[in-house]
Length: 348
Image (cartoon, rainbow, N blue to C red; front, side, top):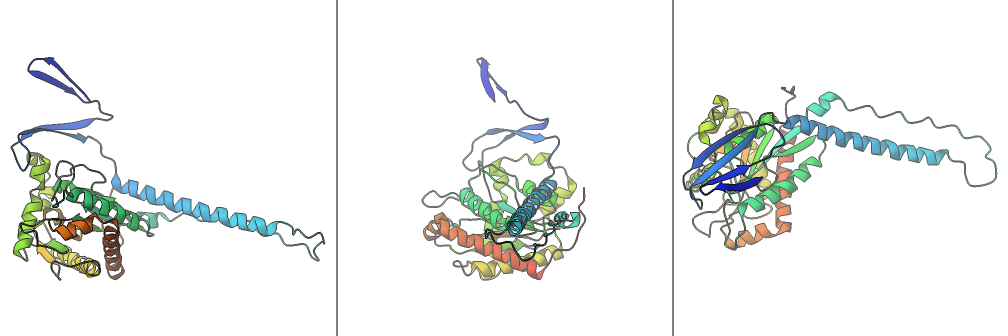
């Protein structure tokens, strides 16, 4: 990137790119801590295939594991074939052990049917989310939790996790949903650490989509707050022209999606009850925009109230965050144990 001012009232900005893009330029009115802004969005004209990347990553790890087993087995057999150190000849010549057969390659059907979990760390980039009394930012906490949870999920056979963001950058709400749908995710888990108007509010919560209002005043307030993240991050809403995406962003949901989401939410909430205090002992429902994928069971987890001094200190503690990760991973695993995913053929 190069910046130069070759005239008194003209500044030229040059950005060298590695691939072709479809740029957008628009302005934003003041909102939150920001004044007037001019925003450049650079979208690639040809996107990478995230599902194919997950499959290739899984295939590489499986083949490496198979090769390691085969090498270890061959070394063990080689040691068995060596003559004993004793000088006395054996009474009978040992039989030659046949060489091990190469392990069969993984079936393509097994590779294609990964269980894919979309993890969505809230906020990011210019949108810090909620900020605790001592300055702990929501976007940093939830990213650390999501990265650790991805490792736990990827360590399980047949499962892979995809993050809607893996660094400190902003992702619009509709783009988070679209990313999950592009990899044909089996679950969508949005991770947050919200704040409330009163610092004494505390406890973890789990939300699913509500078609009619919200299950509590606090849920309605938090949903409105989270849904305004696009205004802070700077989204050109006039460019969202995909009718399917618009329906997902607004009110396109199904009874089956909400039913499955409630099952997932109950499993996660039961595990989180063993980590710390719950704000509500039942899964709540609200109109969060990121929960509106019509075909993916989706939950939004409020790990704690970062506006509460005690819970902010807990969220800062790596050991406490690891216990949260354990609870989330166990809840997801128990959901799939009771609700195995259906077979599917990948749509190219």
